[in-house]
Image 1: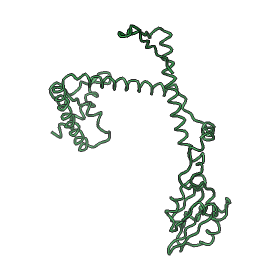
Image 2: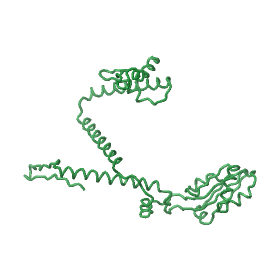
Image 3: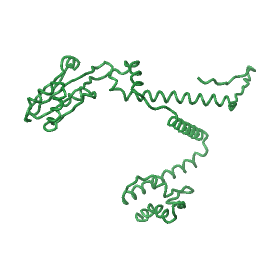
Length: 299
């Protein structure tokens, strides 16, 4: 059975070679449950590519078994429930929603402007800075963990306190040779908590520490830990633009999508009205002998 299934999995490619590219290979049924059939091409499309014969057979057998069970359950449910208006309504609503969604996505991909410039993000940030208050202390700088036995440790301690290109170059060269950890984050914000997790020290008041210190030097029995802080943001302050730029970009794109879909639907509605494709009817109200006007005016 296993060898047969493996041959079946190879069959469509072999048939295509024999018949040529212009001829469509016949579909091969693998299993049938009442009037429902599972075809070999469906199994192949469901399997990942690049599998060996053992894995292909195992996954194919699992797929076939699951398909048979699901089909039996569906047929039993259809027989016992019969034609349910509620289910038909739900299926139709889902189908309509799915088609509308796919059409909206196609329109978005083809027509909506997706580029978000630095100026766009800066403008949004300036107007909404209070929406991006930091819930943690953030820092820029560098962190080095080096063994106490490393050579030239005094020079390293001197370099890391100097904020100049030559010292940074010396630190980088030294760290590649001797440091256990070397993190350079002058251009990226990091959580102070994440950095302090690597240092055997406890800072009870981080805000006070940041306001009064640029350097931290700690030693234990094996290592020296050096932290230089070039810039910081305290908890409750607006997060810097470069830290929240990705978040702002997503906000702007989602806002554009919402506005685009709203305008897209209104334009379609107005066009249909101009073409006379929409007709409203007045519905008599029996108890008052008046009529109910159901004309819709889109917002």
